[in-house]
Image 1: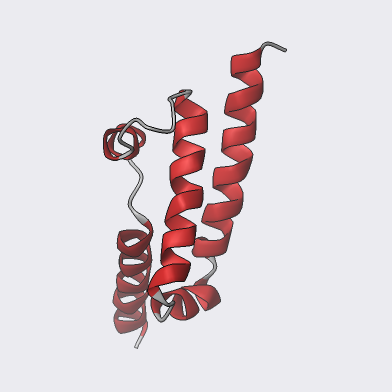
Image 2 (image 1 turned 180 degrees about the horizontal axis):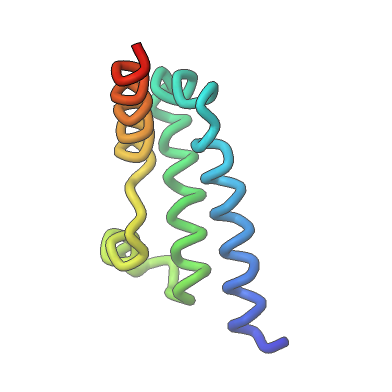
Amino acid sequence: MNHQTLSVGLGVQIFSRFSGIAASRYRNATLAGFPVHQCRRLQSALNAAARLIRSTPRYQHVTPLLRDLHWLRSRERISFKVGVLCIIWRRLT
C-alpha cells in the first residue's frame, strides 16, 4: 500500500464515523440543538477528513475542498437532514 491509498482509506474511515454520527435519525434532533462550540468541533473533524482525503495542507481554504467533495458544512448538514425528516414525517401523516 502506498501513502496516498493509506491516506484516502483513513479519510474515508474518519468521514464515515462523522457521517455516522450525523446520519442517525434519532441523533439529528439532538444535533439540531447543539451548542455552537460543539458544531465547530464537528466542522473541524469534517475539514480534517476533507484535507486528508485530498492531501492538502492545513493552511489551504477548505471550502473549495468541501464543494469538490459535494459535502455540506456541519450546520447545513444538520439542517438538511432535519428538513428531510420533516418532509418524510409530513408525507407519512
